[in-house]
Length: 350
Ligand SMILES: NC(=O)c1ccc[n+]([C@@H]2O[C@H](COP(=O)([O-])OP(=O)(O)OC[C@H]3O[C@@H](n4cnc5c(N)ncnc54)[C@H](OP(=O)(O)O)[C@@H]3O)[C@@H](O)[C@H]2O)c1
Image (cartoon, rainbow, N blue to C red; front, side, top):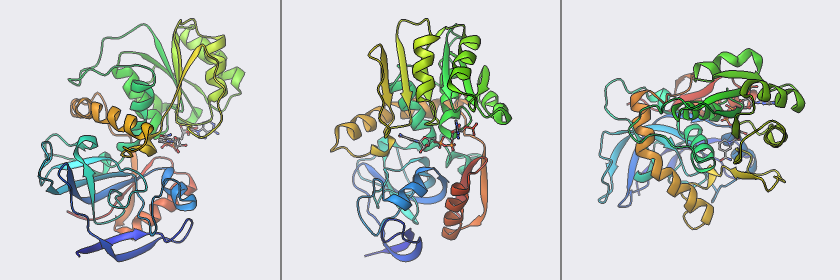
């Protein structure tokens, strides 16, 4: 059996260990074997390390966001071939699919392909997967927004979408998607970071550290009540969402969507609620996993078209110095310290 280098943990919270004995996976018919070139670090990576969340077996190989190059494509692949640059978010906790190892598998229907090889920004692409997929789940599946399949921006609408946490990785993609769908966007953030939300297309920003009353008043003042959709990309905004929809919105149809899929919610019946469950991507034996996987598969060509056209863009990132598996561990430590930007680590050279 061919083996390769990867990072393993033997149990929840056990130290990361770099080993050379990881079995190299073989792609099934609709899968490709990808060489890991860069990974993006997500809040879920340290969380999985400490708690074992969604891990299916030990020793476990973690990792979520990735960019890499296809080495081998399964016999039934129609989209991928060797040499293609791909990126996305791995099915969490499933050892053959996770990118903290030399090579890993992707299902070709839920992976993004860089259209064209010229000027591929592997580091930028490694920061796209979880943020874009999660924002897609909350805005497209959860709120019914529609991106044009050809990558063009929709005509401007006289209606607002509110994004709480418009400076985080998920929040930045949410701002971009809402703008590409033609909506005006009111984004909350730390005042010092307002420029990040504006760069992503936010029409107006307000202070996410203000109390709920202050935030609802800001939403009302900015939108004039002309909104029915709020997304919390921060996990801090459930109360603000409910209060804003109940007290400040003039819309007939009301939606709240959230990245928080663990806290108890008690959403009034007049508001449609949706919570992202990206961690269930690829778990086709679970109803939620099947639904998430089907949704993401249905958006892949649309996302590729928007990323190629520049209507959707990678978020700003910071790169850990150097290349290698020890740098991934450094990147996870930086994530735990609270980074200013998305952290990217180069895992291997081409
Ligand atoms: N359920 C799912 O499927 C799913 C998928 C992906 C991510 N997530 C979760 O979604 C969250 C965001 O992920 P991410 O990658 O975008 O993280 P991130 O880049 O670190 O963004 C965090 C966001 O939270 C805001 N924030 C931080 N502290 C806050 C506070 N005290 N009050 C209000 N807002 C605060 C930040 O805004 P400022 O810095 O501007 O204050 C920023 O917008 C994480 O909790 C992650 O675990 C869930």
